Image 1 (cartoon, rainbow, N blue to C red):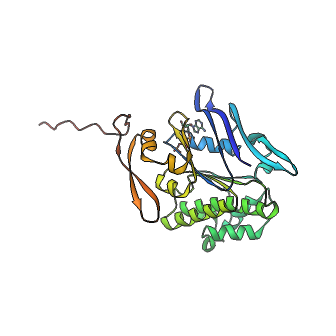
Image 2: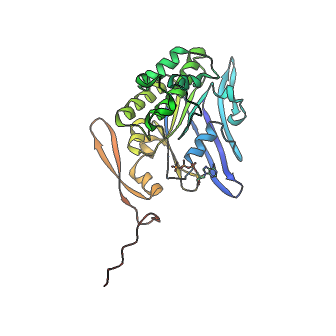
Image 3: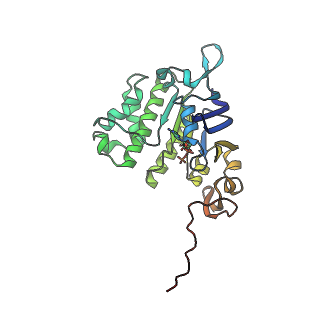
Length: 287
Ligand code: ATP
């Protein structure tokens, strides 16, 4: 019961490959951090795992059990959307809702393919601390509140499925889900992701904050510029200054924290790599 990608190649156009020859998998009951520099292809890989894009070559498959027969592996992009929604919930980096729906209704939309489940909706709303805004129109919320609604919608989808088919594989694929959240809601979301993992859900998070990645993730997949796999494995072995430094072109310092894994603080640019954003030293002023 996993989502696996094998020799995966993808480009939005024929002439510009974005991902080249990626092989790996994500498993139920664990948290995987998908990390790497801007443009490395993290969102693209997530959309391929969600079946929203189809590979140019290679495979992305969902392995699932079908009754008493052995596990079957199906190409995710070929699974009908309603069937896919029973297994995979996707949280986009940015989402919009065309009409002025109340928050509670937007969360309930996650259950479109599953069937109504008021309990799942209520649990998701509580978990994301959305009770005080549940009756408000989604379009009137702040960016961070809207992001919490998007997570809640995906959580309702997965919890609703749990009520109907507790043993079926379920995955939450979330693209930078913490980017707009304040620290309290970051902590609440991290606790929620861990609880969902302990209920058997596979969690995949695209993250830029590597300290958070180190705290939450069991596994990590590091993509490099050019869409190749730099490293994947247990989070403590991938999320280290030695591995991350060359991939990002940044020097990281590992700082001990009392209650958990070390914080990873970017402290300077590695000179060996191009630094396009740097200002040239100013010319001496002459009169
Ligand atoms: P970031 O950290 O900035 O969010 P990322 O690692 O998630 O980046 P992607 O968004 O997957 O990277 O983009 C990978 C590459 O694909 C980039 O070069 C980007 O310009 C390109 N790309 C992304 N979406 C499209 C699209 N819809 N059409 C064409 N090219 C795209």
